[in-house]
Structure formats: C-alpha cells, structure tokens
Image (cartoon, rainbow, N blue to C red):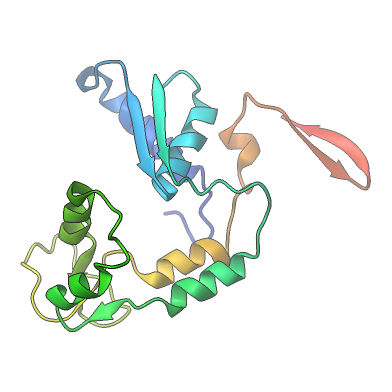
Length: 179
C-alpha cells in the first residue's frame, strides 16, 4: 500500500520489477515510449537503471526546471469538466481540444479515457467490463490528478531510489552530500 504520499519513484521501480520478471519475454532492444506522466516515469527509471532502455521517446514529459506554483495546476485541473450525460457527448465536447492528436491516438483515448459514472467521486467496480452507457466520467479522476500537484513527493525517497547517484544539498548554508 502506497499511502497518501507515494514517491514519484514508486512507479519506475514497479516498471523495473516488471521488466526483470518478464525479461525472457522482452527481447532487446527495449525502447521506452511515454506521454506526460508516463514519459516522466520513464525518465526517472532511466536514472535508476541507465542501461535498461536503448532509447526513450518522451512526449510532453512533466519535467520542470523549478517548483512552479503547483496549486495553480491543481486549481485548473479541478475546474476542468469531468462528467458528461453520455459518451457521445463527451467525445463531442473534447473534439476541439484533441484536434491536433493523431487519429490513432485519439481513437485509443476515446476507447479508454472514459468510464461509466456511478457517482461523481466513487470509483468503478474492479473488473468492470460493461459497455459504456449513460453518464460518463474520466477514467482517472480530476481529484487524483489534482493530488499530484497538491501533495507532491518529488524528493521524498530520492536517496533510496537513486542509491548510486550523489546529491548535494545545503543545510544551514553548509553543503552536504547525500548517498
């Protein structure tokens, strides 16, 4: 169980574990392809294990040079529409937003980006495979996404996640190295 403050390194470690478990089914070269948070996770994994991927394709990775006002991102996320009376209405309302997407990517988004709406915040039942009918919501809730911004844990487990790298930080204006 990850708790309320999972480290951003949890998922990269999970990917590494999966690759190690199924390596006999994954012939080399391994090329990592990710978008947004997925791209960020692959970049972090490449820090943990630099030789795992032969190459990376990172599309819009969430890699920021400084800590930006993350509360603003959370606010904007929570203002975004997340429920529609039907899947066809959801697709109609999002057509303009995703107009520049490749048609194959948009097709996948339309297939997997929405789910049946039970209540606004309750998750779908595990293993639910019924066709989408009636009201829909986003597969990943805006509340889950906003928590990424409100309670980030970018450096929470850095030294354990990246044991081979050395980090310097200042404590009382004195430089000290973490191992």
